[in-house]
Length: 87
Image (cartoon, rainbow, N blue to C red; front, top):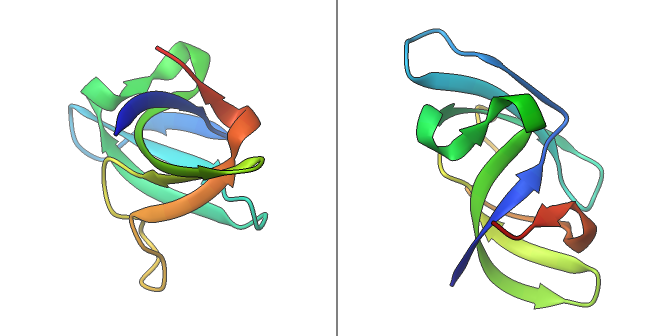
């Protein structure tokens, strides 16, 4: 498993010190929101650190650093491979 940076839609300060609110898009076009630890976010570049689990064509299965806020969404999501940046 490799660590990559995911380009996200928005990054803002979270409710508590040391966390950020992050919004990202899946391959299906669905937006997901989560509170991520500060160490997993590059605020100025709008990047979120993720773990790549599998790649198939132009889609990549990743593990998010925290659970999304929606109850029907898992920490494991598929994102467009083009949205991933190598550290």
